[in-house]
Each structure stands twice: as C-alpha cells, then as structure tokens.
Amino acid sequence: MKTIEPSEFRNALGRFATGVTVITTVDEAGLRYGVTANSYNSVSLDPPLVLWSLANTSRSMEAFAACKAFAVHILGAHQEELAMRFASRGEDKFADLDTREGFGGVPLFDDCVAHFECVAENRFEGGDHQIFLGRVVNFEACDHEPLLFHRGRFAKVRSG
Image (cartoon, rainbow, N blue to C red; front, top):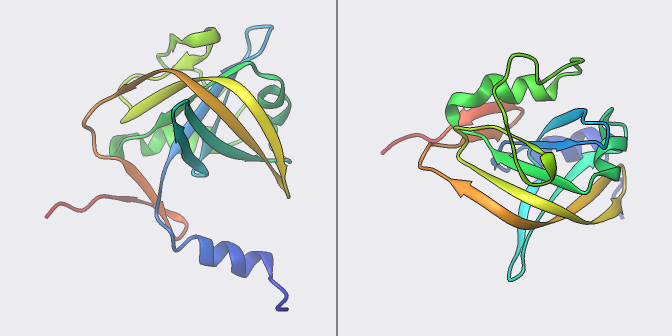
C-alpha cells in the first residue's frame, strides 16, 4: 500500500472545485463565532440534513463543539472579502459587519447565495477534523453567482 503524503493529498483534493461557505454560531454568553469552510455537503432531503467539517486545531472548535445551532452561508462571487475575514485569526471577525439574528440566536449575513439555519444534530470524529451534522430548520436562497475555491485560490463561474 502506498504511503500518502498529506501535502500531496491536499494538492490532489484541491483539483476539485468547491463552493465557499462561512459557518456561524453563538455561545451561551452571546459571543459570536464564524469560520470559512469549503468542506460542506448536503446529506439528505428528508429530513433536510447538511454536513461540514472543522480542523481539530481551529480556535473556534470549542464553540462549535458545544453549539446547539449553526448557520451555513454559501458565499457569492462578490463576497471574497468576507471569506478571507472568516479564514483569518482575527479577534472580532464580526466587527463592522451587518448581521441579523437567526434560529438559536445565530448571526446571519444577508446577500449570500443561500444560507441554512440548522439544529446541531451530531458531531463525528474524522481524523484531524470534526464533522458536524445539522438539521435544516430554515433557509433562504437568491440568484447570485457563487464564489468558488479551486487549487488554493478563489474563482468565479465563467459565463457562456
């Protein structure tokens, strides 16, 4: 059996174009948390389930591991700056951002391609990540073009 080098594996995975999401939650003290993730997937239509994963080393892991609700925001091509903000290690990623309160008090961003408000159903160990399963209780969608991630960079859908 071949030894799989993590850097080569990551490089090969990067060949698959994905959408870009920001996942948000709030803790019992009212502190808001958010992370950029491209490890998002639909699981089931009935019941409506989605999943995403977060590195065990993430500074937001404790908050997401304890959360009762979260929201998945699918970002539009015009939201690259938002993706970068939530991919950073900044202290207050929500500073100067307009949000509204969603299910469970979770912060929601307007003007995304879609967002899914979820009850945190389950969490599974997945190697160096945790996999979060959410039951969708509300969602909104619009017709914006999505922001994509491919080979380590942001990309946009090409017309025509």
